[in-house]
Image 1 (cartoon, rainbow, N blue to C red):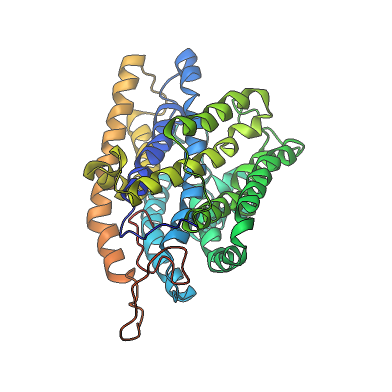
Image 2: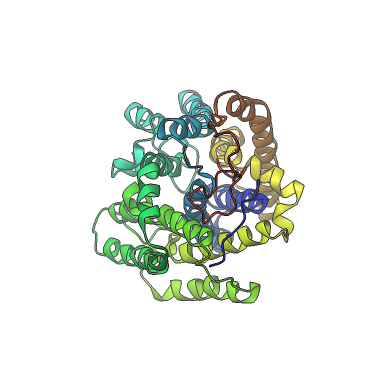
Length: 399
């Protein structure tokens, strides 16, 4: 059986984080911001499924990277410490900016997706438990994108146990397990489609309870994270076929073509989970074979490194900008385009600053791996399919 030799870095998986984060940023800046009205806003609605698919990509990528970078001997306590210092400080910074905005703002920003700002919602948001409340004024409160970090926190809490279970799956059963997880992901929107509830937004064809279940509730999003785990195990054991670049185009295209024919819940990223897993596997193979493409170039890796800061900081900046521009302001398409581009550039610059001078110093100080003791003369790991698998494997995309 062919197995992969471990490599120090998977730069393509760091690089891909930037377009994923940018898809969410563009959707919020161009569509959710309310900068555009009329037909232009209708056209920009296409950014919404791109953003939801990007979030799915993040969930799958997280499961994959956690598994790929795990070393035998890693203790759960060490894992949780590293996760905390990589995730929580930036979250608190974004939360503080959002809370400060709502404390000082004289009127609600004219977003097409209003943001809750009650004290209880603020506390839930800070503690990353907002997703467990089926109320959009809570799970989309203050710094709205933090809802996905609430999901990630749940995934991380379960990861040590999930990895133990994944490693107990016999190699010959990994492909059926992968298919079963994909099937579960595809069935859950059907369950959501029969859930009734109040209308949330006039532009959203999904009621509040259905949206909460299929898009926000952490256990329902967990299979996407698990898909990443199983994909990594398949790759580590040589059980995943090596798709050609042309073949990789087929699943995403088929998924996009099928979405209009299915219940609206399928437009929230579900259809892209399996294609994203295949893309991640393909990029990993290219990195391990020293055939990395544009995503592994230094500029893309640098942008990928600051992608979490971009994801968590851009929304408070949007709130502040919309307030400063006036809640009743309207813009021509040309002026709106310049405004959106300016906000994106501002967000990227702020994200780089946060990553360089806030996130990096904290992770370097508190999020380093504890060196594992090794017996004298111990051999270096020879493959990711061996009992010592991944012991030398790290990735900068391990956020």
